[in-house]
Image 1 (spheres, helix red, strand yellow):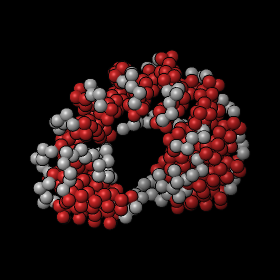
Image 2 (cartoon, one colour):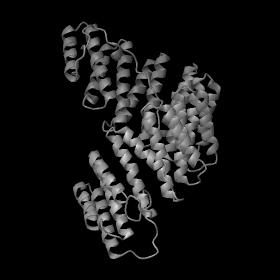
Image 3 (tube, helix red, strand yellow):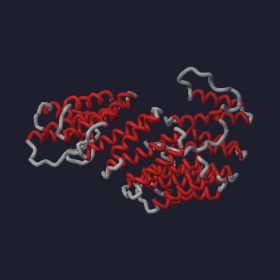
Image 4 (cartoon, helix red, strand yellow):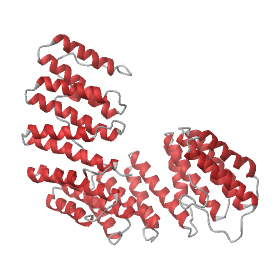
Length: 475
């Protein structure tokens, strides 16, 4: 939502003449809708926007018409927030229909907003070809030197590329990013530079997915060279992610010394960073460094890298940083298991559970569930079978009601492993009841072959530690 006169998505321009009375009324109705939305009174918010349109849609005053366009755009946003994506699309379509052919920059900004948001709403409905068409149309706009229109065109290019990538159309994705960089790569406007940097980063990711590691590295170098002097945190975060990506690509080629040097360069360049997004990159560099050190058999250095994550960010309240601390502790547990240091392994998993006690944050809850399952497995491997069973029961109790596919799989794994272990302890009645509990909790939604009745777990629920996959995509 955008208040009248507030910069951002399609902000208004400075006027040389005072607004007419109708403009003040239209603006007041519009801002009333914004305030009602902030108060959670969405129905009243929508009525306010509709009143702007009803009263002023036939006005010939461009300032009044701007309020109409703003109201329709915010109506679409409110409807999308309610999950009414088709109705949101119709609101954006009304903007495009009412203001087709306008030339005033202030109105064009809102038409651009509607076209972009229309693409987003279509994507939410799974109508991806129409979504792509909306982004493609906006990406091709002439921006008339206007910074807001230039931002929308660059943003649309980026969203177009991301959608292609999500559909697995990687060659097309790369071509769209090339078009974005070719058109806007020399821009000095910070809002546009962000999209150029993000496009180069995602271009590298796409090339990596295509198995073209050398080109991936070259794209990361292009990103780093283009923004080597930047101090803008929003741009710098993409450049540093690019440096991380370069390290991962070097690692995939077996160039491990250069890989580790890339991670160290991230840590050096962000040593004084304070922005949470940049601190997350620092945490990721430490984790990736730890993973590589562990793969090289340098276990103590690996563990120290994980300890540094906890030391530097363990007291931070930001959800993203809390997640990386949990990842470091979890991976520390896995590394300790490899080293045969079982008590320390269990302590690491217990600290994950302690730090991720808020089940309302599903990202943190997932880490706690992973750690809980691994803790149970470790206890079983130490011969502490009753504690192992109790640990599985704790996973089921804590996370059994949460609805996220990964967490549900972890709960299913815990329930199945609990049944397996009860059978191993010679408690067939309890084992049978435990399998019944698995079937009750995870009754299939469509026909399938059912769970195996043998006292050995299938491949998806085996008595093995869960290994962490740290790699993530920003898009």
